[in-house]
Length: 345
Image (cartoon, rainbow, N blue to C red; front, side):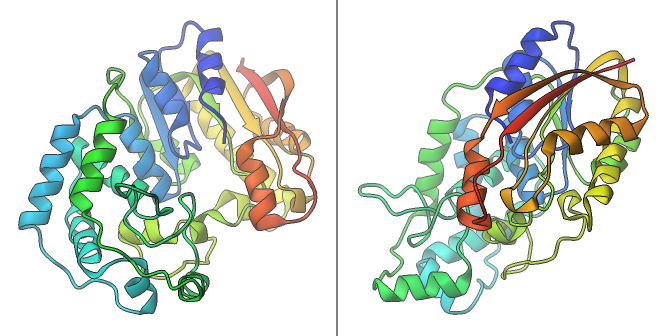
């Protein structure tokens, strides 16, 4: 994961860029950077939550259109049975939960740009801290960046006598849409795909001259459980998923991880022009006991696809990496990230 500055710097230094690829696009930082400078982009990610958020980064719709769609769904949409249980009773006020469930049901089969934006906005407001004044989130007290596990959340709310309050879903949608969509860059033709990058790339027709990405750190295992509420909203089960199927970072060994990552670089090279640039920011979890620079360089070498490393630069420690270390790993200080740049020859 990297700040917006990283892809913007790569775009600025590679002036002949006609199309950008991010094979581990996450929430779409590279795609938004490309859009900001008017360059088409393609992103791929295996995580549905990431893809839903990234999709909104490439769409251009008005706040009014988003509110109209939400209002129509809440007025006319099917009202499915909301999830049951103590967690759901304490997380959301009953009418608010019915509204969330109604929007969820309608969006499962809508694939328009406006639906993509509403979907991302709902993911953003689904849970978060309470605040004074108009509420910004739909839930009882909860972190914004990840969803508390049900058992812990129920214990927390009960210990503090925190009951969910009525939150008007449409009102929160309207205020969030107005803030997010007030000033948007023009659309530049971005596409986002859900799936394994090495497989998805085989099906794509566009070619690229710049790849900017940040693969998941070796051993990272928190994203799916952390985002379980957002996964439910996208059609998943109403409980925490603990599996790791399909996650590149959960390979059984460092050697297997390097091989899997090499497969992505190989597939990427087949979709790139000669002299294309590959810019990768990579790091390590403290508990993984890895050398991120060595892992990344080994994966590029093992790809044997024409990528020639032309630069290796320390990138410091990302706030995201520090949060992973503090909240989930708790095993030593964070390891600095590295930027590796390669050229296709």
